[in-house]
Image (cartoon, rainbow, N blue to C red; front, side, top):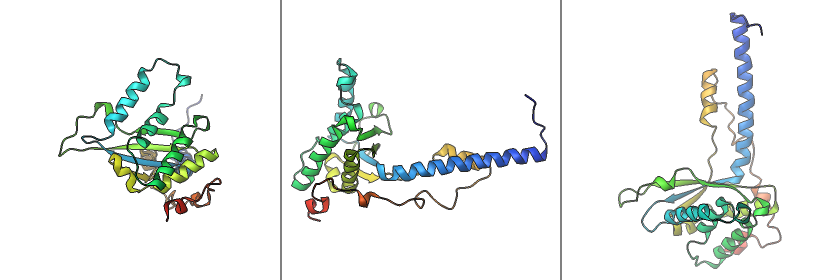
Length: 225
């Protein structure tokens, strides 16, 4: 293969090609972020005495120790999320109905309702919490959107985001704040391209308001809102 002569003109052409490739990658990532903005949430769980993290760690250890075939087990992500949803009794009947519905939805593993549920830190290597040091562990929750069950679970989780019910496990649930990945930001800087003016949040609008309740009473009515 003949080596390209490095002239100012060819270098300028290469730079233009690189910039076009970065633009394509940026558009692709912005589109993915618009989709994930509706389907992804972050759960923040405080690591403290009597908290739920040791229980989650035990769930993971038991899951890996099981001798039965993988095909007969619940996926680990489903087992972990089920542990959270059943860890503490809920006194509010309306919230309890939603929690039970969520359990029925996510346990239907054939529909791939839960695509991802994983901690962003290694909880197995975390030190014991102290009165002054109670680290918060973020968990990434990504829900499927191809099935009716996945859309319903997404609707419920997003409705319960910012709810006080998560304080029972010393946690918080928030919609994920989607951002461009650091590698893409680094490439943009290398080719002399700053972030575009049009953010991914402006590239699309949420359609969650239009998701049907699948024949169930609306959640606002169930919660008396």
